[in-house]
Structures are given as structure tokens and as C-alpha cells.
Image (cartoon, rainbow, N blue to C red; front, side):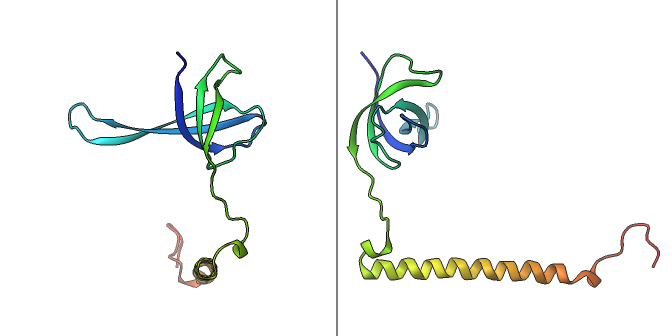
Length: 132
């Protein structure tokens, strides 16, 4: 019987190939703590229909290449992708715009700090062995 896994598409950059990330939880044999284990599988997608973020089922098959041993069986759930801010409700669009402006402002202030630090060249310590 062929192995089947359900996972999330993490890459669809190559032609007719997707990378599926499969997560499962394991229990430590001694400490009984549960932890997540993730593994990536390359799978054959003949029609290039799966996109990043889709939840898919892959099935084991004959080796397609050096690393591909699975093929896409079914797309269980499509990823929800928002292409434009206009597609979102006005409240959510406002929150997105605010967060984007805060990110830009914080990166600008960090650039200013680095410029100020580099301008203070007369405050540098003298080099070892240099005479004052």
C-alpha cells in the first residue's frame, strides 16, 4: 500500500513540482513531552495546479527523479490569498496601512542612527600603539 501524507505546499517554483511540508506531533519516549516534527517532500504536480499555502494530499509512487517519490493526489483546501488591499474590508485595510507605515518609519529611524554613529569619527578611541 502506498504511503499518503497531508501537508501544506511550501514551494511551487519549479515546473510540475511542489514541495510539501508535512507536520506531525511525536511524544518523547522518556519525558512524554509532545513536540512537532516537520519534513519536506517533493511531489509531482502534472498540471501545476497547486499553489503555495494549499493543503494537499500526496501519494507515494515510483521515483520521478532523484528526490521526487510522491505525486499530488488531491488539493484539500485552497490557500486564501489577498492580492489587493481593496479586496479587504475597510477596517482591515486601515490596519494594514498603519502597520506598513510603522515598519517604514522604524527602518528610517534605524538608518538615521547608523549615519549618526558613523559621523562621530572624532570620538573614536586611539589605535593600539599609536602615539597621541
